Image (cartoon, rainbow, N blue to C red):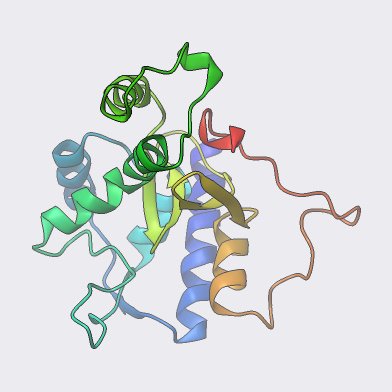
Length: 201
């Protein structure tokens, strides 16, 4: 049942994106391609993210300054770019440890020097859930058998909601006219982040 719900949600998100015309949609990833990607990078897509990419692979051209498209091209040759995108959330936290005195009390006393603090934080962050890029710095948590997570915008330790789930995110990012004005239900409640560590921001 969870897989079916995730598949429906991801396919709906892909349909909404295709209707906007805001991304070039290539044929979706095959099961063999998903297997290769997940083995290469050591994570599993959530069910809705997988269904989204199976329905169509959104891509874009590099911008005029030569920066890559905001869409991760899971089929493309630039594996370093994909690796960078996958590492970016943790690297952003480490940047704030090094440059902005960020430290979690759960990590114990902060080491004396920034370099020691970064080393200690890196060891702690090795156990946090993997975040997988959807678009630019918008992320969903990895995890087969899961779906319906809010899409998070992660910039260092500045983490905010960008969609209650994947279809809602597509509307909010690419089709403002279709996006709801508030969050959640009629009471205006915000979505609840479900992924450990990242939800604490």
